[in-house]
Image (cartoon, rainbow, N blue to C red; front, side, top):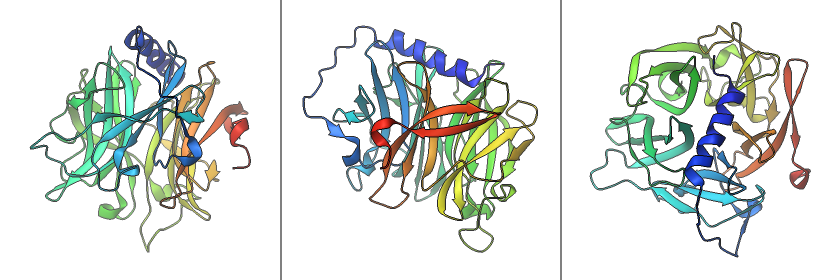
Length: 321
């Protein structure tokens, strides 16, 4: 079984191969994280160049703009001006959303999972491919890899026993009680295999609250395996204090589950998190908070394990912010 920490290490090694000889010029004018509006942050670690790559929607910065861009940083606090990694070409099927980009290293390539839609096409996650996390990315799947008659979003990659899966959210706006689902992908990630598998419903979490009568949200899945063995899925919804991150646990250590839910959220006041290795090899978590536009900012935490659970410690320079 390929574990989460091993997957993170694989991503770092692939970055080593992709970035050797990377001589991108660095601007002297850096953007402080406090001035960078971002939702659904996703970070990739670039060891050879001692920096981080954070992918974001262009629409965070330019209202109405379509596509995705990458920022780079040496310390997660100060960021270079963004590099555009994808904009829709003429005739592209989608013309809206361009949400929740994630970049995953897999078998020598980099795959961007992004959520998008069109007036006559339901929202879903499509995969894009490039030789570098800085792009340029090209469409890899034929439209969304999520079912075309579903409202779906926030697809992420999980590899188990060399079998790639996409885990994603079936949206509450279509089905009321939002769900977390998984679908197998072909070895080259070019298409789904079989039908999606239901993992859990948002209302299964004791901490989750309705956003409207009978409506429960699922957002932003990511995986982490504890050193002691249990497989966790961190995901977001709304609780007593608003947007939050909860923890689900696989009873048998596999993506199929069954999954149980922790009674209390891991974090309140922000969400849509992911976990990545620091340049020093320690697990870190990033999320956006608060959830109010245009106040969203990336927040970074050290991930600490204790008694089959994880605890978040804000990085020193962001404590109290």
